[in-house]
Length: 320
Image (cartoon, rainbow, N blue to C red; front, top):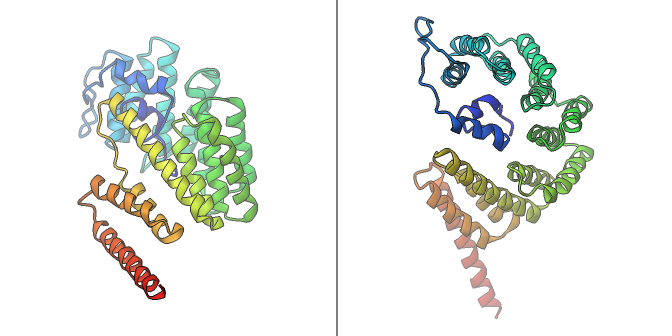
C-alpha cells in the first residue's frame, strides 16, 4: 500500500492497484487499442474515438512515455461525446502530471483533480481525485514523519464524504499506516484499535488482506508475536484469494505470494516459536518460488530449526 495505486491504469488493464469492481470491469467491455502513438517523432496515428485515445494514453503511460500519454488524454477529452468520457480524461491528465518523471507538475495535477471533483461530485472518479489530493500532501515530504493532524483531516474528509467507496477504504488504511509510521504508543494503539474494529465489518473487501498486514506490523511493534503471525497468515490467505479472483477475471497470471510465505515462515520460527507453522510456510515458499534467491536461506533456517529440535529431544531423554 505504500506505492502509488494508479486508478485509471487499473481500469485500462494494469494490475498494480485495487479499485472498485465497476471501474475494473470497464476495460473488459472494450479491447485495449493498439499503441498508436509514435514515441520517436511525437506524431499521432489517426484516432477517431475518445475510447481509442484514452486506451492509447494509458498504454503510453505504462511505457513511461508521459508526453505522448498527455497528448492522447487531451485528445480523448477533445473527442469525448459525453461527460463521463471528459471526466475520465481529466482524471487521467491529473495522474499523468502528478506522476510523470521528469516534468512532474503538482499544480497542474491538482487543477485537474479539482476539476474532476467539481464536475463529477457524485460520480466514480471524484473520490479517487479527492484521495489523490490528500496523497499529494503526503508525498511532498515522504522522508519526514507524517503530520497526523493534517492526515486525519485530509483522509477523514475522504472517509466522511464518500462512505462505502473504495477510495474511503484506502483513505482509512493510509491513515492507519501513517499512524504506524509515527511509532509512538498513542498512534500505535489508535491504529491497532481502528484496524481491529474495521476488519470484522469488511472481511470481503479487497483491502481486508492489507488491513491484516498493517495489524501484523502493529502487533510486531507491541511484541505480540502470536497475534503478529496470525495477522500475517490471515492477510496472506486473503491476498491469495483476491489475487486468484482478479487473475481469473482479467485472464492474467496470479502474482507471487513468495514474499508473504517467506515472511510468515521466518516470523513463525523466530518470533512465535511455532515450528509446525514455519515448516508449512517454508514448504509453500519453496513451491511458490523454487528458484528464489532466498531458497538457500530458507533451507538453512529449516536446518537450524531441526537441529534445535534434536537438541531439545536429547536433553529430554537425558532428563528421563
